[in-house]
Image 1 (tube, helix red, strand yellow):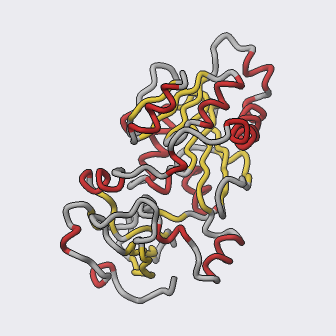
Image 2: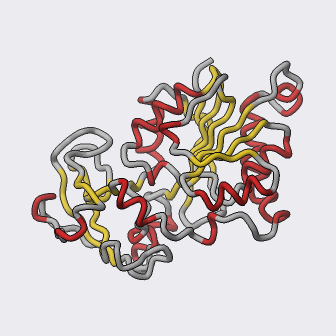
Length: 286
């Protein structure tokens, strides 16, 4: 995307979409009001787009912290429009054994950081795993297979119902409304934080829900990866038109946010599920 010198006030806007989106008043990471419009991407070829949604997505950059985020975020009415369609990858199905292999390294990484399979599973309490934005439920199923008491959360009714029909635990809920009777051992947010309107609130809530020594695992696109840079160079980066995304992070910017919210970053990994992804494992001090 080519950068412009426009201010947020001068960035393109269409009044007919005012009911479904709200303009960010300041940077959602540092609260600065020093922001620049850096470009717009056409959204009409996005799989979930329909004619009640804006045909472009405008992006801003904070001059103080460098964070890149959308000019607008969705209202409740806007989310209803966005969720009118489910992305094919967010519905249970596909090759289950292939998905078991995809998620096996993630669960094994978590077990290793928690002290190893034997020590984690030999404890008096069954370890819990909360998968936020669980989509097709494949991670919930894999964590359950390893022995975790796993629960998937998703804002969409369709994938939740599909997971439940297979006999796994899932609930239709926004993460900020989630509560836990006992502290959670692992919280995973795979392709979730970039969707959150105010990611700092989500990180703080995750910290509150986790048990001391528990893990928060976050995976999302890495704006500083070679893959991202090559897609930008070829003008073929699909993340700029993701109507469900509000933020683009780098490894450094995400790590800094985790540390500011009381976590220590324990592991960085590069998964192969989507283009340009990164995966960070962060621990709540015990």
